[in-house]
Amino acid sequence: MTSNRTKIDTLAYPPRGLSRDEAARYIGVSTTKFDQMVADGRMPRPKRVDGRVIWDRLRIEAAFTDLPDEPALNPLDRMASSWDRVK
View 1: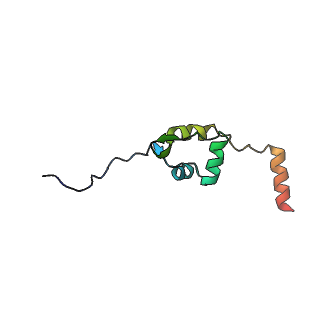
View 2: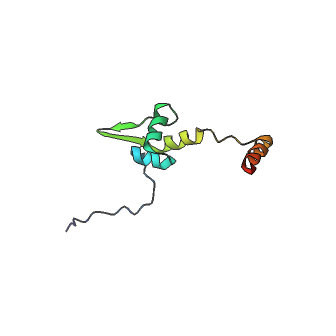
View 3: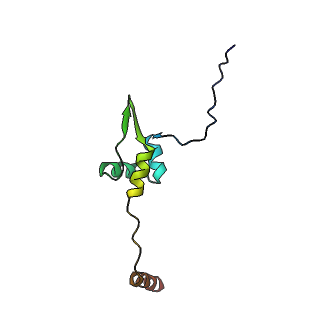
C-alpha cells in the first residue's frame, strides 16, 4: 500500500542552486546591489534551467572570496580619524 504523504528530506545541506533573492541574501546585499554586481562582473552570471534562472552557490562563494577586503587604515589615518571624532 502506498502513501500520499510527502517524503520529508531529512538531510541537512545547503542548496547548490539559488534564486536571485536567495543569492543576494546569501552574500548579504539587496537584490538591486546583487544585480549591479552581476552586471559589473563581481558576481557570476546565472544558469538558466528551462524557465528558471539559478545562481550556483559555489561560484557565488568563489566570487565573494575574490572581493577585495576593506583596506586597513594605516597608523596615521587611524590617528586622524580619532582626532575627527574628538572635535
